[in-house]
Length: 386
Image (cartoon, rainbow, N blue to C red; front, side):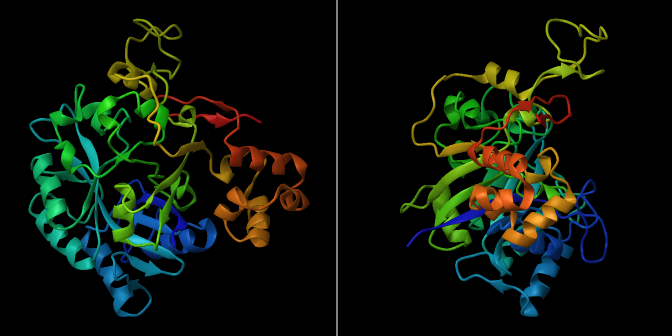
């Protein structure tokens, strides 16, 4: 019997068990154990991908948790800790002879032994194996082959963001310039795009789309996520869902409205005003940051939606809602357990008893993907309208 599992496959480690940085820009309290506790207890996320597990200190911490009985290695892949299954992952920067600019990719593996072997191999192609998102010195196709040799999953990350992504900087017009299309297991969309936008590019029609948080802090976990239909939360089942095998699938994508993403619109690089024409109408600068929406228009080959796609539901984290502060959030969690339950399941009448009608109505609008937003761009996030 298949069940539904909320899944976020792109979470960073800020600090390792010795307090040393892993993701330099990550929060200091973004540790392995804090992530698993946050996902399991506060967020209500069933499966997380931690994408800095190639770092030997992080790998050792996971292994120690298993050896001490705090965590359990799942028979079909993954690490069970609390109510959440950890999928061992690695985010890597690729900039080989075929790339126009650097791109980020995600590699996931079923067991500690696979990730250990990958980490050892990667250490001879990287300057500092202990840090996140480091440059891999080698060609992208070799990395794809190595990932699959070790029974892994290969996914290009946040593929449209202007910096360090496949379509943002990496290629002129096609992923085949850099990658073997047959060795891609899924596509991660990123915060400034959605299914309809991405499906304008015909070569992406064959791939499952993922919506993940790319969390650099605990509150950002599950700002985007998906609901998977699986028999159990394991690596094997995840792999089947990405290929839509035996009725396993991505059932729904939950992502922020692309207009909330900080790279959605093309803006002036100097003053962040909307940029059209040859120069900024506000400050006169000719420099701009091309938005995801305009980049996709350049690449577009199709204006149709692929009929087999799951629903893409526009959502924002609860913390984005106007007038929902920390005290109100704690009150909601005390009554209803975790954020997934609040967002998806609690009836409006029950919400109203705790937070009043206005905020309860806004949570229901969030649930249905009907919030109004102002667009972001140039590194500045959009916002939810009151």
